[in-house]
Image 1: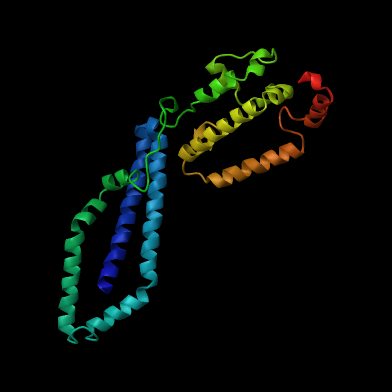
Image 2 (image 1 turned 60 degrees about the horizontal axis):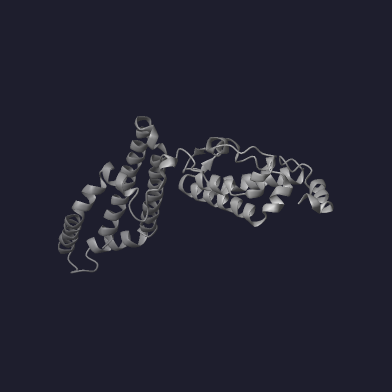
Length: 263
């Protein structure tokens, strides 16, 4: 049994080495097929997780090495088993041969870069789905948000904003400060739902790609740290009255509430 542990540790180190080669292959492929860069980054992310799990499994075996090494030494010295040194030796030799017969095909596959390249999107992992507009994660698909924006009737009736086509929307959707507060108040739940749906889409896009600086993506980044940074920056700007369009939020809110005819 102890010899099996040793073979498992050796096999784990061999797998990690091949996974590293696969990661290198993916990184080099980004130069050849740049339109697949996001998907390749996802493969790399999953391969790193695979390597970490394999290393953790090997570490568990290594941590118990003192126990199975002592067992192995005693066994080869004739303690346990048949009690005969040579019989125990050949018994252990037979176990090793049988082990390699059972796993030969598996090990042959696991020694190939192609195997891990495919495993990167095999269960429990999966290839991220992108719509045609998203072009393998290179762009955002804001059509649903644009339709909701067009359905904000009070906004369309207002002369405060000249609503344009989809291209105009892509260039201006983030300028929430351009929409007067009294229009947001009039739209009420519809405007809130519009923002929530947009946020949900960004969140899903973030899970698939992890947005960095809005349009750049990198699945290898730590999302939680990015979210914490954004929250801290926003809270600081909000408390100091530096959020664009909300610099005088208290005065504007009080003015609207004092003149309900504006609603």
